[in-house]
Length: 77
Image 1 (spheres, rainbow, N blue to C red):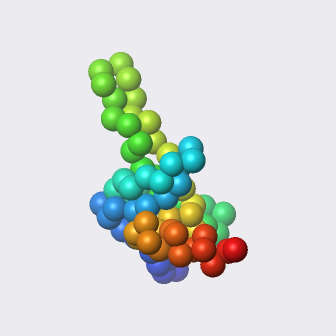
Image 2 (cartoon, rainbow, N blue to C red):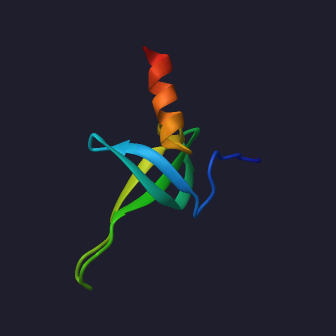
């Protein structure tokens, strides 16, 4: 089975997290329940006892540019 993704690991992607527009690089890609999910590091750990803060987003909630994100929501209105 071939699974095509919009973005590859290492590519910068725009998404909304916590009400903010964020641009981060894809660190992991997963395929579950018929959908593609991207993992992003939101904040890096400060000490050895901390962990990176990561977020996982559905491919349908990710865009290549802020302009594409704006056009998507513009079309929804």
